[in-house]
Structures are given as structure tokens and as C-alpha cells.
Image (cartoon, rainbow, N blue to C red; front, side, top):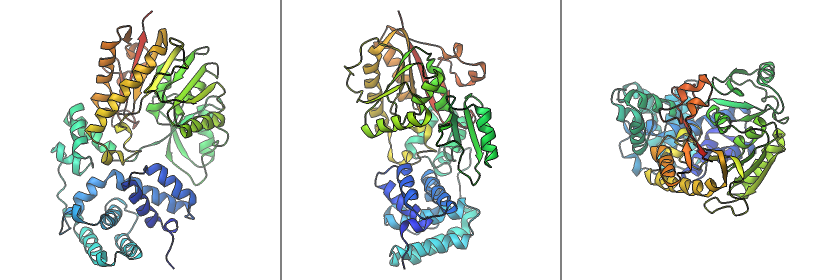
Amino acid sequence: MTSRPTDSPRRAAYEILRRVEDGAFADVVLDTVLDRSRLELRDKRLVTELVYGILRLMGRLDFALVQFCDRPLQRLQAEVLWLLRLGAYQLLELDRIPSHAAVNSTVELARELEQGASVGFINGVLRSLDRGHKEIPWPPPEKIKAYLQHVCSQPVWLTKEIMRQLPNVESRALGESLAGPPPLTLRVNSLKTQREEFLAALSAAGHQALPCTYAPEGVTIEKRGEEPLPGNAEGWYQVQDEASILMGHLLDGHPGHRILDACAAPGGKTTHLAALTGNQADIVALDKYSRRVELIEEGARRLGCTAITAREWDLTTSPGFLEAQSFDRILLDAPCSGLGVLRRNPEGRWNKSPVNLRELAVLQKQILDSVAPLLKPDGKLLYSVCTFSHIETDAIIETFLEEYPEFELENLEKQVLPAWSDLITDKGTLRSYPHCHGGMDAFFAARLRRRN
């Protein structure tokens, strides 16, 4: 009897990858498939490893496969190419899976998928890869461009963007970081518990965790135990990267403030602002889509955030229901290319291009134009994005300041803790990178003040 896709980890991974190729988001499809599956926990972790690993390292896998394939990869059927990638990832990246098991399981999956004419081809390529993988002519680290593309699995356009931003050694280090898995970081919800108490609860449940370097509420899970993380239903924590946690602190909100979170979903930063102000600030959270507004509200209830009002609104048009100069603080975590979170959303490196970055920069400026009039005199607006491209970061701020002389850029070096000084640029903005800031995501932030 043929197994269902959700009964076999490799079949499940294959089906998810095909859906991502058709435009689906990997994390959404993965969660849906695993929720409906009958797989054991170990097999669910294998599915997750295969999906994210293959999407992160697709460029590396394809470079390896080219060495043993007698025809161009682009001429292969999509089904065959994904099966080859599935087998190659297990052979090259998963030491715990014996090579014969990696090859045989892929060949059996090809038969199950009725790829009869290609079974022998798949078997031959993978067995050749297994025999000859030590002879693959990987580009050496000193050949930065080729190394980034074929070893670190960055497409050509992204390789160029990385090399524009950072010198050679730094480019290589960032590329290596983006090719690896991200850390699992949690923000301890100070409305419900404190970091030391939560660390103790994690340890008691069999998990290994450490406090984050920069974020005072941050916890990094180094090794998960078999038990669920404690306190999920109770709202003790929110899954949130350390760089993202810093944004709430940079906004400098206080009890009594009226705060706008302009692009709020799924709500991690919104609920952090509520915690930082002890539920004593009036927080308005906007998002373009109704389902994402529901996510904000669900998260607020779970975490005990009582001062958040969430509403659907597309900020490419001015929110007429909000009064001009009525907010003390505005957080604009703008829609962006997500280059800084490619470890978490690895399909982004393959489905984006410089054209998308230019389109996003236009959108970011539109939203800034919509929210800027809402800020009070002497109020502060934090612009943040999880990317490092120039067009979405410094260029946006420079253009905005030229058009809005009533705003000035604050130097964050004078505003942050001394331990954060290595995150602050010469311009006074914040830039974080995974290769030099404790593994946190790559973020950019600039704080603007409206003059009196």
C-alpha cells in the first residue's frame, strides 16, 4: 500500500519543496503538513531539517550535482531535480544518515512517485556523488564571489549585494552565516515571569538555554529536550530573534505614551512594547490583512497584553481615522526583502531579485510618508527592517530627511547601553549581522525625532 505524503518524512519534505517552488511560504506549508501528519517527533524534525536545509543550500547542492550529472540541471524534470537535491542533501550534509540509506530512500521515493524512466538516472547520479564527493572542486574561500555562490549558496544577485555592503572577509563571513541554521531565540514575557525564572524552568524541563548577549529578555535555546517548552499556554515567552527584541528598546516608549505599531503583524514587537510599558501605554497596531490582525489579537491575549488595539489598514494610503500629531512614538518595522532573515525564510534568496528590492523601497517610502504626519513634536519614529541592502536602509532615511526637514536623525550611540556600542554605525544607526553579533539576524534601525 502506498504511504500518504504525511506518513513518510522524505515524501513530506518533497511535497513541501514542490509547493514552495510554486510560490508557497516554506514555514506555513511545513507547519500545516506537520500538524496534519502522523509522524513521530524524530521524523518531524527530519522533515524540517530537509526542507530548510535544502532551500538554504540549494546552490551548493546544485554545484555538487553538476559534477556528476551528464546533462544540464535546467533540462531535468522538476520532479527529478528535487529528488536529486533531496538525496544530495542527505549525502553531503547529514552524517547521521548512512549513504546507502540516503540513496536507497531517494530511489524508492522516485518509484513511489512513478518516476520510472528516471529511477536509474537518479540512482546513478547519487551513487556517483557518494563515491566522488571528496573530489568536488569547491571554490576556495579566497575566491570570494565563487565561494559565496557555490559554497555559501547565494544567487548571483545576492552575492553582489553582500559584496557591495561588506569587504571581502566580512562578505565571506556573512555568506557563511546565512548558509547555516538560525538560533532559536525566545523573548521572556516580563508581564508574566522573569528571565532567570524562565531559564530555571527550561532547565527543569530538560532544555539547555543561555541568556542572550544584548537583549535583556532574550534566551537562546542551545539544545531542546524531548519535552515541550514550558509556559507556552501561560504566555511566558514569545519566539523572537534577539535583533527583533532590540527594536522595542530602541523605540524608547514609556507608560502614558500613545504608540503606533504601523506594520505590526504577527505582533512580537507590539506585545514587547506592551510589556516594556507595563500595559500602561495606549498602543495602536495596524496591519494590511485581517487574518494577520487576528494573529496580533491572539498573541496579545496569550501574553496578557491589555492595552493593544489592532486594526486592519493599508498604509500606502493615509489613515484618516488617526489624528495628525497624535502619537508619542511610532514603530515602523517596514515590509522588506528579508535578506537578514534568509536563514529562517531561505526560499527568499531564490524568489527575489534586485527588482523586488527597488519595488519594496518604493513601498517603504510610501508607508513612511503616511505615518510621519502622525508623530507629535518631540516624538520619535523608529524605522526598522530585517535586511542589509542599501536601497532599503540608508537610502530610505537619506531621502526622507531631505523631504522632511522637520525631522532629524538621532545618534543611537548616545541612547543605548554601552554593551550595544558595536551595533551602532558611524551614522548613528543600528546594524546587526549574524556573523559578528552573537548569531542574531541582520537588522537595520534608524530613529527619527520630530523637532518642536
